[in-house]
Length: 159
Image (cartoon, rainbow, N blue to C red; front, side, top):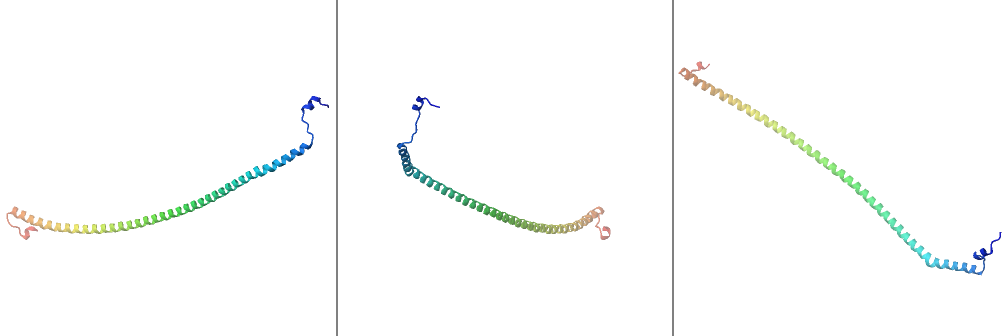
């Protein structure tokens, strides 16, 4: 297959010659210069940033761990304090209930004694009133009988 002559003139012909070595040398020098002036400083900056980021991340993780430990300790102490407060309140409540029951029992006992004394006093007063009424009724009956009969009544008339 033969190519037309016009095609060969317009195409790029790569024939190794002395400039190829010059190009390779320029590329190697550029790699060395760019490595020394650009890539190594950028890599050092990126590594320093990575160390700072990881260091701060590690520091943040330690802070979070410390905060979680303190929080769990706080919650544990809070539960313990609440338990103590509830038990103290319960003991105070039971002591107050016991004292209330004792006072109530004592008051009921005093009321029962007072009621018994008052009943006995009323019974005595009733007996005294009956005696007085009986004496008065006999005296009034004697007076009425003496007026009705128009004479004084004797012991035989009263029975």
